[in-house]
Length: 69
Image (cartoon, rainbow, N blue to C red; front, side, top):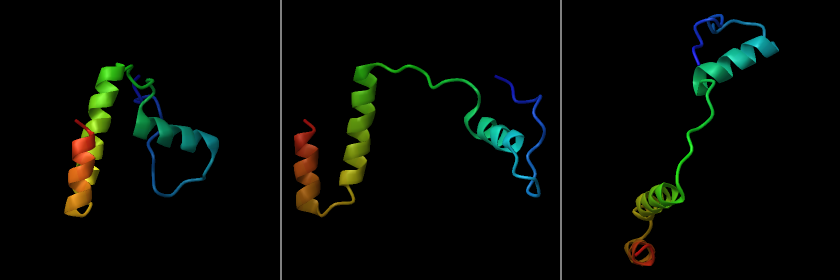
């Protein structure tokens, strides 16, 4: 969906519903999120957990990574 027809968002504005909708569309676009498969969702979740685990103490991180296998 093109947002070209919406008025530009400016820093000084009246916080009305049109402005809020324009901001939402500028950030998120107007299209729904794409459908993803369960396998893709699991893969992404695993990578996120693995990345977050790297912030844990070494023993806990190792246990989390081992649990992902």
